[in-house]
Length: 237
Image (cartoon, rainbow, N blue to C red):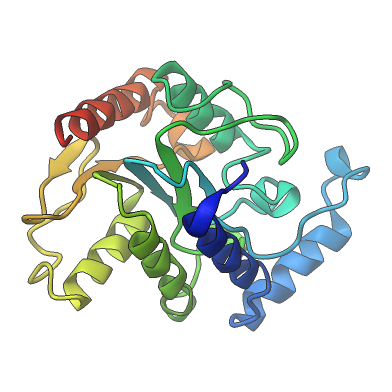
């Protein structure tokens, strides 16, 4: 997706900074090793193997916050939620609700565009066992803060999973916008309005294979989240 104008310039600079980040040695070592060894199905791929920047519409009214890149998904392709089963599940829901131009996401060059949505994550490197350490999340958080400052038209934040939700709410708390996280218990498709002038918050189960294969999160459940997000974003006009 091509970014234009001053906002586009600012996002490009931020994304270059994210891609060049070396703040978490454990994660950088892991991602490079995954990119070197590869998965048998992707031996012909040149893995991205770097921190993954955000992706989407710079004028988005809906911001999606995930957990972290998948080791053989975004860490391979270089684009959030691209190239694995979680991405397949997510982009299908985004396509069906009008936020994505196509239902599949295979590579950075596959032509997919987001409409009115932007995707980011609490951590930008793929962590071992999908579990970034608290200190790694803390080091990565300023990138999300900068995105929140740049994406001024966001009216709805969709937190994909508890870690994403706590990371976002932690930013609001530390900025003095909310008093504590205790008033915002996690629950699928639960909607919060943190305060005047703040984006609405929708909590959602993460579209991980563990959640989708067990039926904890179904396609209909995730589609409902984004239908709800569109309604809230539209009413906020």
